[in-house]
Length: 81
Image (cartoon, rainbow, N blue to C red; front, side, top):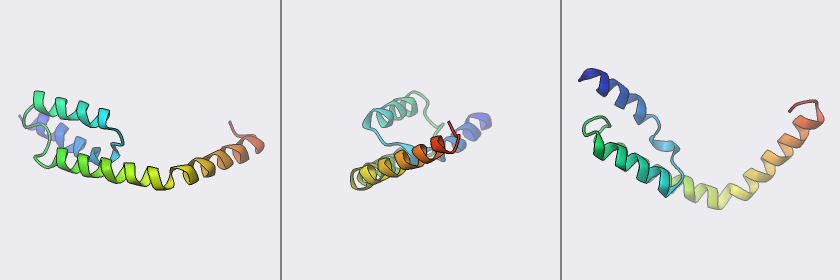
């Protein structure tokens, strides 16, 4: 009913967050076992976003990891944990 539709609409915001084939496969299985919960375009959006995320990580991942390591070091040096 409408509660499942409302639940599915909130899940649509998660489509851009996938980065692995495994997570996409799990969501695809979820969608197959619960027809009508996700929007018709959810899996397509999730797949496209996953590939964009993978491309970004391949191109920028090393630089992002370096930035995060420097930020963590600065936070630790400033009394952060």
